Length: 166
Image (cartoon, rainbow, N blue to C red; front, top):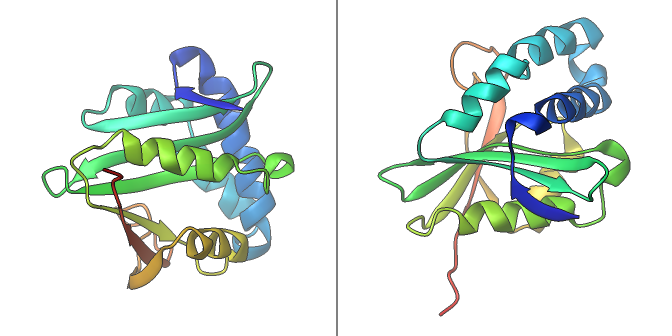
């Protein structure tokens, strides 16, 4: 897999990846109906198109030339000092192959003024929590509205410093 910037031609495949990953991860936590509602809203083509145009952000895909295996979306906050990782998902049958780490490393490199990465993760998503802990993140807080707005979805807030090589 190689990591590149997402384009409009990727959006159908990205949406399919997000829907598949959300059902694989969250059906047991929230139920199929709630996951369908969330994916229709958060992962609609219109929502994905808006990410392509969002200032001070980066929308990446991991691509092997035949399919999209992973996706990441992040934006700058705190005058560019914090990378807000909004999404990092890997196709269920591609997990455990280093794609998430590749996407995370590339996201960090897109924000050279940042000194930390922050994200929200559902604590019942044990695979994601284990991944972020293995990547050096620490829990720094909680939110009752993952993704902002009024989602009503609780999540842990994780952070890690960005260490830039000299």
